[in-house]
Amino acid sequence: MAKKTLSFEAHAAKYQLDEEEQNLLREIEDGEWGAGPDSSQRIEDFKADMRETLKSLRGTRKAISLRLPEDDIDGLKKIAERHGVRYQTLVCDVLHKYVAGESVTPAVVAGVLTDQKARYNTKKK
Image (cartoon, rainbow, N blue to C red; front, side, top):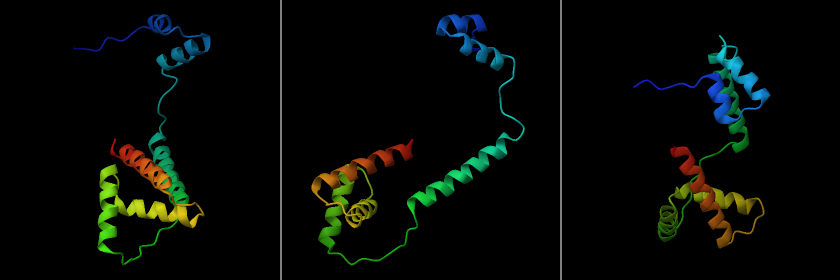
């Protein structure tokens, strides 16, 4: 079944468009707006810029090896699993807050878990 499209007048009436919005809609319908010939390259350039920006915001990371008691690792894994986050990221974020001078209290760890869960759920979408 073909999707019914509204005419300019129907859009303007249905959505109560003001004069500026009506002018913009007319321009769009007349084909004055759209992807330009270089839009694919511009999108790729934008993506590359965003990757560089994110990389610089995160800073560089270095892999390390820690020897921790197995019970502590198991406890961290259980906490992380209960909150639906990765335990290594939990450790990293809590250590970062401590190094930054924040007092690492249970409330701070709860905030880290909430932030991580939100980031993780956003990535899954």
